[in-house]
Length: 117
Image 1 (cartoon, rainbow, N blue to C red):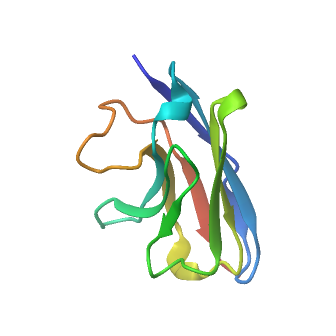
Image 2: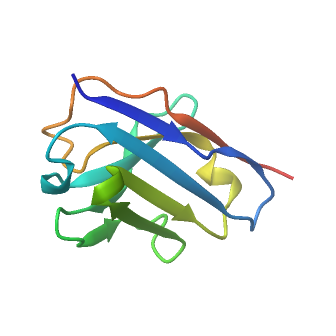
């Protein structure tokens, strides 16, 4: 069973930065596209960034130009650098496969990001 462990969240003021990490206990990690998702209170989980097995990235319009997804296959870890944070970025952030139609069934605990002054 795949285990996903997210970390790096916290409370930050608007305009601030955070770097999230997600460690995946899965063999052949380098062969999977990965994604970061977020879920705000009362809202559905949404996909915010993906990175393919060979490093091609895509972003939701709401985070484009502010967030950067990257990966370290040797460490089986995917990162999300978040800059110029806004209150609307407040959510619990999760990682999983980059394709919403073929997700691993078990999600991690997520990491809370709160953007507030």
